[in-house]
Image (cartoon, rainbow over all chains, first blue to last red; front, top):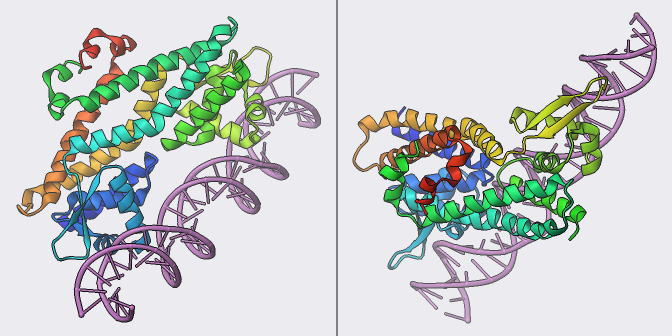
Length: 166
Length: 166
DNA sequence: TTTTGTTTTCAAAAGTATTTGAAAATTCAA
DNA sequence: TTGAATTTTCAAATACTTTTGAAAACAAAA
């Protein structure tokens, strides 16, 4: 496999994995392309590298900026906008966790709290209440853990403390 | 909110969250329904509770059994099959992690390893190689961590050691 | 101001995923 | 066996998501 093939394969796989995770495949491919690009790229370059339409290129770059994974670079005397990806994996993962946590886990927690309200007058027979109580406890913990993860710095992940868990 | 509303809301939210995570919404709703059911249910009961077709009910129950989240119960002298969900949240989460890890993370790791082959003759200029090296390191760690998580028992999650990470 | 290069929008088209439901297969009891 | 109850399958229909591309908006230069 040469470098060109390797890049192709990487972009393809990154897109594939993303779509398993409920993320638009093209958005992930744009992300992969920018991740491995030596230099910032224009929306036009992304469009022709990936053989996608202008609109698609523009929309997905924009979405990646919303996620905080891609940034804009302006150059003196040039009209075009250049884009580059955040390459520090720790920052990338943190950004993704924060985004998904906020958009997905938190609304679920909110619903669980609302439902918890009915627990007061919950008859013994209701396994419902027990399950909700369990899930709340669990997702609460998960939420705290993610918060900790996000606050922690990159060295934490490889720290001896963390290794103890193995 | 009464219990009936609560159940409805729970099923709805569980389905919503699942579809954000690339899991079939109906499958998650069937899971939610069985999670909060006091007794095992038949495919027919699931079908009418959720207002879905017979085929849909059957297929999703089957998928949940493949994931190891739902089990079959046979009753003496009855033709019908009853189904119930695993209710221990720790087991549920472990099961989900194992499944997704195997289906999604591992293939990605395999691709990264293949790509790593090109690193040997990787020119200095290629930021590609650096990014791939980083991602490999990171996902390798993530993979190990998930393995540890899966092997660990449920007490681990709430253990004092774990709390230190906060 | 007008022209020109560039980005953005969005309705329609194409592509995917899910659901339905009727028919086929299976299973068990009579 | 046969027949009734039950489960499974899968092609077609429906619903949902993504992509396209041309037109509109915008912004700098002439």
